[in-house]
Length: 46
Image 1 (tube, one colour):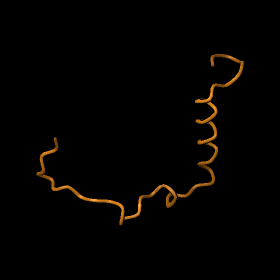
Image 2: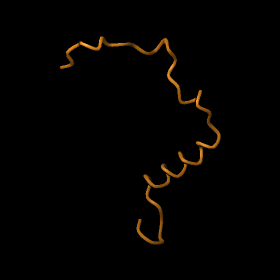
Image 3: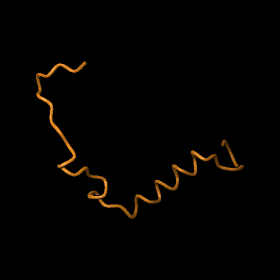
Image 4: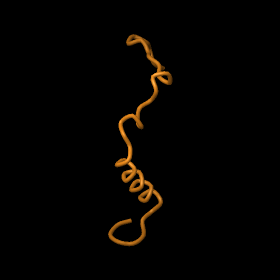
């Protein structure tokens, strides 16, 4: 948006997300272990 003027939709989304971070804990950002998986270190990814 440059200097001054209205904010774009993306800019307001970013600002809102940053402000919400003050209300979140690390637990809110974590993935439950039941929803994760592992891959063998020697597995070929293609």
